[in-house]
Length: 197
Image: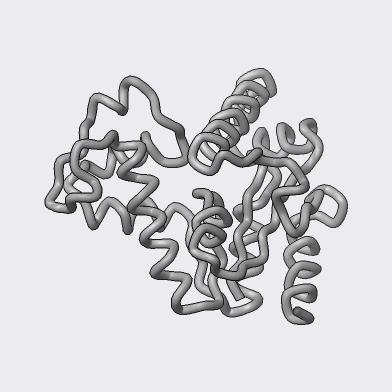
């Protein structure tokens, strides 16, 4: 089974995905998609990192991609990153039993008519801020701003590349509030669900 997890910043979606992959014995893809995409290109990893899960912007657009791949020649780092990550997602999907976190994986697989379970992880804003304050050790004001900014970037990225509407329940098979059960038990509940499918 292929599972795609989209998540609000601070909801614990990444950790839930990682725990779920471990429990089920699935391959796990997140930031590794950036690393894999970078290894296949002549764009520096630093530029690709700045392009990851961000829509087109004028600064990154100046880094025009010029590689031997005709499909990627003359496009921005953002677009090159999206296309390369999509290729890596589709290749990984051939192995089956994978969990993808972010990077429009649900859309990429849908466009290729590949069956997947699409999950959105959410949590109340205050819970997300508190969680990130503990993890990052920063003040509430800075974390509040970071949570809003990251959610906006993820929404803009998803909406730009998919034409969809990030975070809206109708885009997903399942929406889960991670604060209800907590990170560990949410992962366990999802594992039970997946095993029954």
